[in-house]
Image (tube, rainbow, N blue to C red):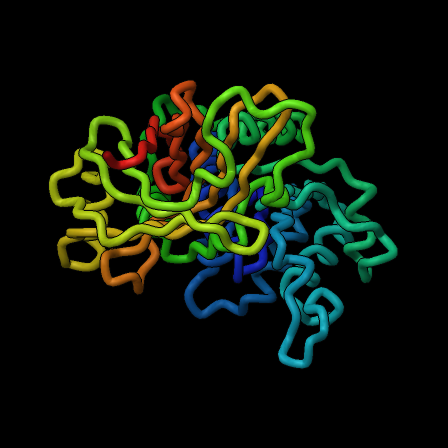
Length: 340
């Protein structure tokens, strides 16, 4: 069966989302219907010829609009999308020339395609197309909406019963879990300026922006607490941690298993890093929204990424919320408290 779904992305900040999207769409429509270049190019084939051949079959092109897709530059400072040989530009041009359906997917805080006057052809046509969002913290709902669009274009869901993935899907899951291609520092979701909105009344809890910086004890699910540090970073907020032991943490069994299989070594500790915003609105509790990355204890290999969103509790001394994992495509409850 010829692939009907083609995923186009900028490698520098789109690999993780492209891999996760290919995995999930493969489970809905079948792996053979989804084309992702790093998985589907045959050994010894010419990259451009294979991509061109696939686009010539008039599939649906899903274009991941990440910050780097349109703003990446070459060594001379020239926009890459202005170069006729830019891979993403070639894919978009070939898709439009072949009459393929093109759906822009807005990722990583991109709110809308830039005005046509700011973009070279063929990207100046993006504003004419119906776009969708693809957000880590609302992945399931955004994916379901995209699946409905693809069905409307004539794609059929796989007929095999059960969600058991094939070998290629399992490999994708492993790669996403280990975050081999994650560059989530550019993936802060829905960033806003880290200045409180001017309000006529204070938030209904005692915790304020000035009370956030410092060390917090984070409890995720039933796992033992660990220390996280929040600190100001220009107009944003930064999250860091010292090495956190994960040998006996139930929530990390998934990652330890994959780490052992793919590296042959035990994953004993990890480090959190992240950036985000503080949201203060009239009548609402103070909220932090942080995109995070998890590294191994040495800090040299990315393991996973996701989103932390937590709001001040009524006691004014803690934050309650959810910790979303891109690798597991799941969220767990998290509570941050000041150490006593």
